[in-house]
Length: 175
Ligand SMILES: [Zn+2]
Image 1 (cartoon, rainbow, N blue to C red):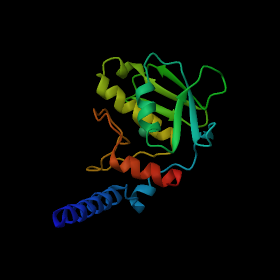
Image 2 (cartoon, rainbow, N blue to C red):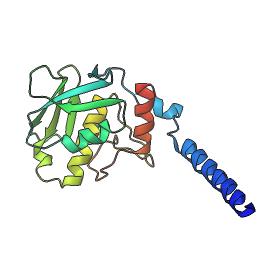
Image 3 (cartoon, helix red, strand yellow):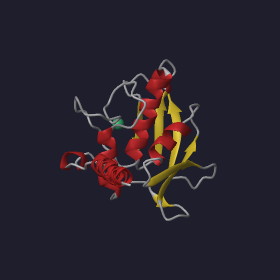
């Protein structure tokens, strides 16, 4: 019987340790992360009341996986539409200007520069697609060495949203 009680309390202590480590693992929002935001956003709300961005993809590249990665952060859903009532149109252009892509808030356009995109590998394309969606979500450029982010300007191969991006996103969307 004593052994059972010991085991029982052992389980409670272990459970408490696990739960406290979950609490500690929550994203830490720092003032420095909140500084990397852009005031303007595209978001409306979807049928659940969650904020949303709809995109119409007229580019030759798929952006669905990257949209899902951002949507999985839970505060804003990004999903495709075929109708003209979109928040942002996704397009291509081709120009030798050392710009891989851009987001134009006033024109509601995200454009990828096919002059560079056509010779990028899939990781580099994913990085740029995540980067431009980041702008649509109100994240600004973040050219800081050592920060884990997809918002650095350049041609990188990071394919997952960084811890600093998550903190900035949470700050911007009020988590
Ligand atoms: Zn940018």
